[in-house]
Structure formats: C-alpha cells, structure tokens
Length: 180
Image (cartoon, rainbow, N blue to C red; front, side, top):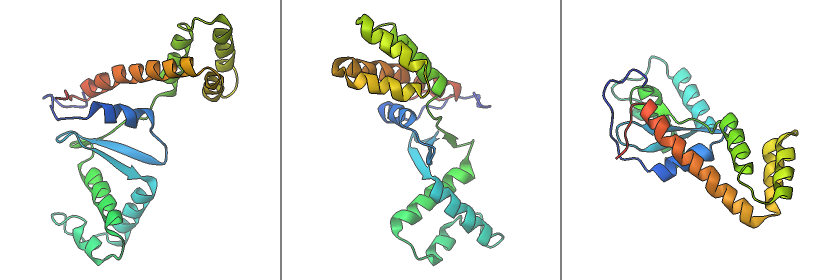
C-alpha cells in the first residue's frame, strides 16, 4: 500500500486506465493523480526538456511559483508548455499525489497466452499457437497466427482485455486506491 494508511477514493476512468496499461510504451510514462483520478502522460522528450530546464535554472526558481516564471520566458507552443507543467507537477508530487502506472507485464501477458491456448477448441490451431509461443518472438508469432482466424483473434482480444481488467483493480488496491 506504499505507506498510505487511508484508502483514497478518486473517480477513475477504469477503461482508460486498462487501455493505458495494455498499450503502454517505453517512449512515454503515465501517472495517476491519486486525488483526482486523472491520468497524465509524460513523454521521454518532455521529461528531458524538464530536466534541462531544471539544470539551466537551478537556484533561480521560487518553489512556491513552480515552473511558471520559467515557462513565461520561453518561446514555445502552449501545448508544449502544458506538457512541461504536467511533467513538473508529477515530478514535484511523485509518490505522494502522483504514482507511476505500470507497463503491461510480459510474464503476465505470456501466461495469458498460455491460458488462452488452453481454451482454443480447434486442435490444429491450438498446436500452432503452442509452437509459436515456444519460439523466438512468441508474442509476434502468436499474433501472426491469430491473424489467420479472425474469430479466434477477436476472442483473444476479449480474453486479454478481461485479464487486464481483472489486474487493474488489484493494482489500485495495492496502491491504497479504491475507485468510485
């Protein structure tokens, strides 16, 4: 529960959270605002920009004013400034208010494929999928084989999504969050 004694009850869009976990990338990170339930995305590029701003302005900023005086001097599009504001907010409140949303776990995803294969009725397809996950690049091979069977492919998407939907509330409980 990460040191929290009280369970927080923010309004969280669970389908969005499921999607973020399922489609996470190593090029950006997602954070959950424990108070509001909002999900913030910080790209690697924005994080690097923020670190550069911190380095170039060390000792210059007023902690109470935050990053605003610095952003006011910079010439960049508003959307870029907003991304830096959010990244700064996450940085300042990380652990207390903002927590990192985990990437999909490859071990769990592999286990999901194994469990799904056990439900496949077509013996030939079941054998092909079993062989696929035993080889190099099992995720790619698994998906390639399912491309040839649209019905089973859709069933896989439903199965996989169901598993993610089961794990998301568990992760929230571990973080001391009970969504409303």
